[in-house]
Length: 140
Image (cartoon, rainbow, N blue to C red):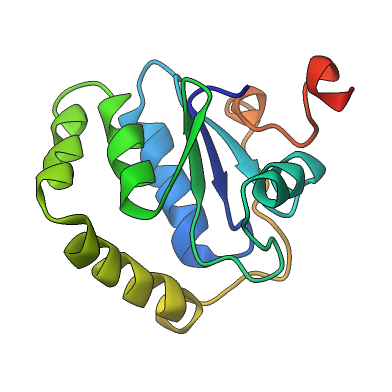
């Protein structure tokens, strides 16, 4: 199972911007990424009940366990170095309240910041953190 892997909407400017911010916050390169448009991201979405053609969330795998919405955000923050790690305290906000804000943002993400014609292309120094295809062991 994947670990510290964020599956995100690669054509969403909001989502791709979030990935850019996370790569800057993650000095140790712990978190890896897969766009849901990639074969690997699509497979992971389908296995976890997310429609890759109409995503309303991203997945984050924390020690092999999938998380979505604000639980995914908190798990991802927990894997970052301080002070970012402390943002996982958002878990103290009741899940229905925090997920309502998340759902609103997810529904309006294209209207807020638009979308791209194609997935973002990572820079050369970040390319090793992006995964397009399942690891050989996961391909069966």
